[in-house]
Length: 532
Image 1 (cartoon, rainbow, N blue to C red):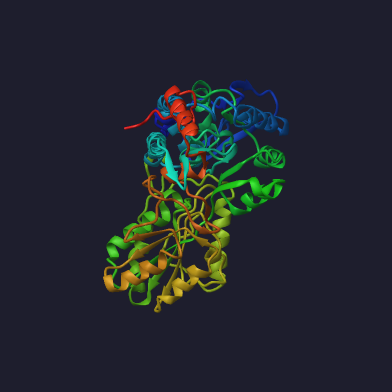
Image 2 (cartoon, rainbow, N blue to C red):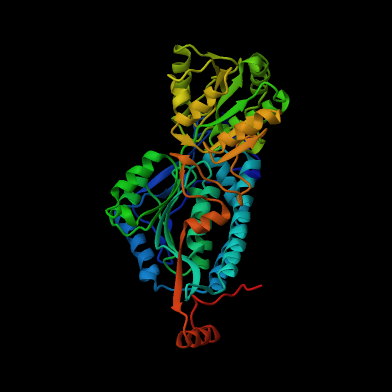
């Protein structure tokens, strides 16, 4: 996809390259004077020679192992064996810090949205939605944290023991977010982690790195030194020495399971390492004979191709009952071919792919499937340029094809037909993944037992609707290799914390002491600021 600078609306134009040199360690915004890495957009523009190619957006620090360990040391010092200012801070004070951050963050909306479009090719509406959804997520997290504090503002008595039970921090968190939602899903890790009193080292994703730069000042102004440390560089260079130190208490990562396993293996004390992971998925759609075809096609279009299918919640394989296979394929293929390709600010569903290697990967999947007996059903399927691929609908797909086995994470749609519902159920059971499923049909007698089974194979069953993450207050997790822990608003706060409590045998002396502790408000642990 090509553009000229003159054709780009002024509001969304990159007037000059961004030479970002700053990082945040120990409460100080430092300037990196070492090696830098160039950041390119796959959106092609015309250079000075009149040639089209990827657009150079700017540069970011390519930081080293020493920088990584400095960030770790800052987080360790801020936690200070549980004695630090942040982990011992009153709930109301941590809430105030987070509220200040989100207020400052909102001032950078236009800048961040523009960079989301350029860096990862996400269209304007979805880029704006990602920013606004992140703001909502933070506000919802603040509200949920207050609810947790209210619920814990009491003593229990059981078996002659008083107990005051609260959720406390775990320690130091290494936070690594994904490129497809570089703001929202990254902050779904980082925000609850620090909200619960942990300290963090955060490295932005390779694609979607510049968009973090406008927010450094907000982090700097909102949190005590060492609570949030932001470093830039290659994952292996930054994350590996941090994990090898053995000081990390929580690995928070959204990405590929191979990366998660590699990092876990580096930790010398695995029993102390908590995992909060969002990993791969191969979410199927199961389309029954009585499904409303128009509704089903619309949902499958958005489910398979929103952001070019680059979502863990995307529909990545379609099972269609043989009785309606021909009708579905005809309608679906025509709907796919009718989609518009465009640049992000044109709000097309299909936009440039951010990864330079992705078109070649998609072509390999298509070629492999065709070689093994599948056909490209839609007329435009597999049309390619250097930075985009028109979606290909493949049928019939078999289990020996790469597109069946792998999480394609892009615009290629494998379709299988079935006559016996046990086939897709068996496939799901044997799959390495178990995040979500979309079930399309109307007959309650058929739907009811299917829902009962599917709920035991995945973590979300979507009835006559595509798979999705939101609303963020609903559970978001997965079985098997798809996830570890849960990342909804309420559950994320629990994922990044541990239940601790003060216990006291019931007797006159202890009762008096407890009363004095509560009256004095000297302890932050046994006090609350949000009692209704």
